[in-house]
Length: 67
Image (cartoon, rainbow, N blue to C red; front, side):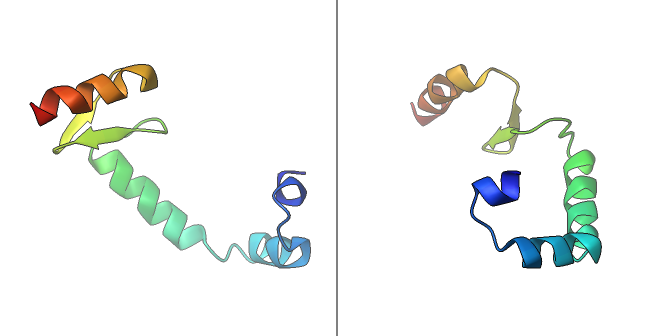
């Protein structure tokens, strides 16, 4: 349903999904994230520091670092 909503090529999407075409890349991305402490999405890093606040507080955190 999401693929249709996004107007993706359903045949290509189904083929790639069934063949697990991107499984290796996804697993690598997950391993990389786990290695740096990412346990949810979205996760933001500001100047190499993991931002732990809410999305609504992200702008203020960036502004504080720009001072």
